[in-house]
Length: 450
Image 1: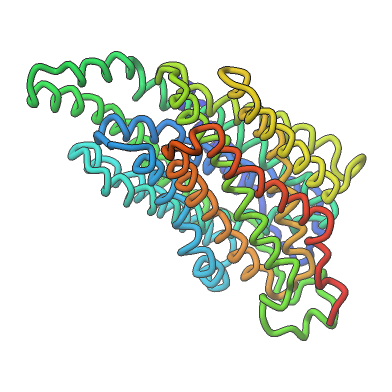
Image 2 (image 1 turned 60 degrees about the vertical axis):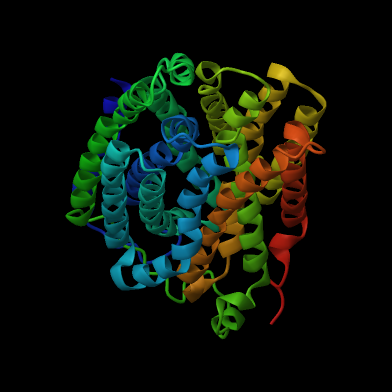
């Protein structure tokens, strides 16, 4: 089974921990053990990519199983998942100050496992609120994991090549992201269109309930397996010797910066938070909302369940481009600028086309989005020194953009004066315009001021 190979890959990655016994004390620490650390963090990126991109399957699955009446209700799947980042981003940075990176990553995996187990009673009762609780808890674990892993990989070498390292992480993340909806979709959405018709034509309430209960039970085993794997991975990280990075008052901070007293005294960080907020919104729209977009054009559930994987495949291609071009041929700033321009072009093309052509342009937004996180994150934390962990927590809060933008789309698309296509355009274009601004001017604001 493909899912078994995915988890085996992650476990084999973590086994490398036992060969590492060195503490990293400078941001430019590279070499054999530094490369081993990159390999291990890649395994972690694979894990949270696998879990994050299950939402594209959960949205139609829960809409059918829990008998949700509208797309707006269904988008509370992304709302619950991504709002956990906003609620727990800064608290995660404080936890990391006490635990360090390694123990913080282990704790994040443990919390994710607990969130996965919540899916079992949620599926047995077909309780949509309980599913949302499970998603929020999973998101809480991912918040801690991302708050640790993103700055870790950003400063595990020169800041100029951070986007390249994060692009490598992105390949791990998006390979998992492309696989996870295919795997879970094959398990829980097989024959979903037929079931939809059977539910509509059920002769009695009892027959309808039986059909929906059978559908809901399909998700129990995958999430039990996921929980067991996450518990195991948490234990392995806890016992490992993954090198710690000492960065309080790090070497990338100038004397002037060291005298600052608040993370909010860095304008480029605050503007970067807004940029990440909007970026995650458009990423989730392109990956998770593409199925709803296709359904609104009359496409069947059996067809639209594959759309999310198309977006993730395009993102994977973008990450591969980033690995080979940054920083040798392309700076992080220019990569972000080109990506924003591509996002603007693809959004306009999706608006002026229809059918599968429009869907193709939305999937291509994955290509445009690929280099955005790898570029925005290191640009935003550059020069923070002792505030790096707090700044990373603030940036991770920006992932809440994935909670709000799909809800806005779901609300606008049902308005007769707007409709599906225009609602998507209204949500996406301003975001890409702001990202373009940050790539040209925003990332420099305040860096040369006292």
